[in-house]
Length: 389
Image (cartoon, rainbow, N blue to C red; front, top):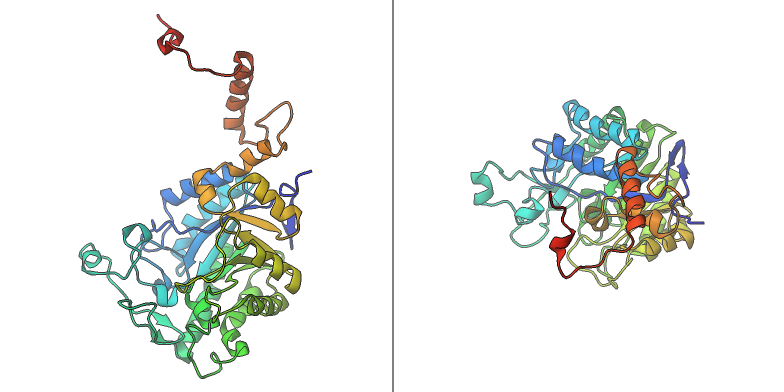
């Protein structure tokens, strides 16, 4: 029997299967608000059979946005647009989740499809102006990028408070899973990494000091996030550089996160412009497997997972508890439903029984008709197959 289609219970929430939509920024919000695009974009994955539908990185403050197009949860007025997404997901059997984060030194840049670099005069001419960015240290991401302000004690306290306030709003919006973004070179990843954290206070230097703020935020968020709802952390399991954050660091940090109530580590990697590790199909799955095994915590695997048999193997072999699809989901929003058919999990008599009824009914009628017609083959004269009045 297929393991990836077995339900997964995390605290008081049960996912219908182990397929998750990976959080992928769409850069299409205005002033942080979710609109029609977001409702339709996420709705198709709920219809497509995903167990967990994770909404993209959502900023905890205006200065925490990656771009002007990021979603936000720094204001109560952001709640209704996101609540629409969560409600629709639930109505079609998917569990709604949301990732909240702060971009830190990687904030105030162009949308990915508009350059993905520092904002310039062209961006300003259309009203998208740069803002001051923050980081653990006053070190820019790269030459030509904004120089961040190193956060002082007051700034650190504000970041923590913003995460807690956004978590409360996510709850009001109806989300059942919350994910904290500690990956990809963004603010809290920058605190963790020795490549970017030059501080000499209680938030820098030793491993214990560098994990202090991310761990404090996880603890404070857990206190306001209901005990019956799971809390995830997306982690760059390795920085990419062998001189940076290591998989051993991730295991130790995951043990600490579990102790404060985190349930699942979403295992990504990189974020600092270098990657000294093998990069192929499922290249991040070994990180998820090692953290799951050595930290005894749930994990979500992600990274060039493109085939139903590949995803099934990850779960069946015990390397992770969930498989998150990003690009593969964009290419095929019905990936889990197609996987059911590919793995022989579809109903033997009603092939589209697990599809939403509005589509499944039509597709079963079509399947029945095609079975009568037999395989299609090209005819020399295709016009002869066109009905003539």
